Image (cartoon, rainbow, N blue to C red; front, top):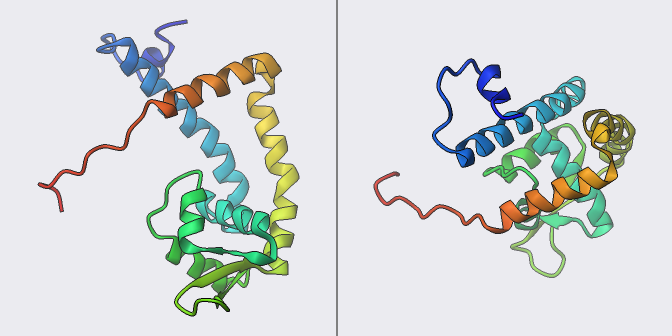
Length: 165
């Protein structure tokens, strides 16, 4: 099976290492999976990150979540959760209020329109994920999940480079 990515990207020489090949395969596969999600969310004018915020807030219920709590739960990192919330609030999918216990804290909550949009997208997204991955079957999917979790558990954030602003 080795060499398929090399052919797909029309690379004439082998990868520097099997680790490089594996890493690039992960990136290529992730992009292919995300492309399907992007196309499904596009008619709703939602990004993956914006949809992720809606799902996080739906899970929070009436309690809502602060920007920091939302940022910590995002599947795909977005450095500007405030901007995401601004756009969702303009579309009346979320509301933000000051915390009753600490006026310095702003809590975001899902509106009924936001909840309805989440509900409307749930089945199509589940169907998409099934179409993308069901061919692997439950055992291979469980193996894949275990491998991916193992990889993530060994990754450490890169050290900040003082040379870069």
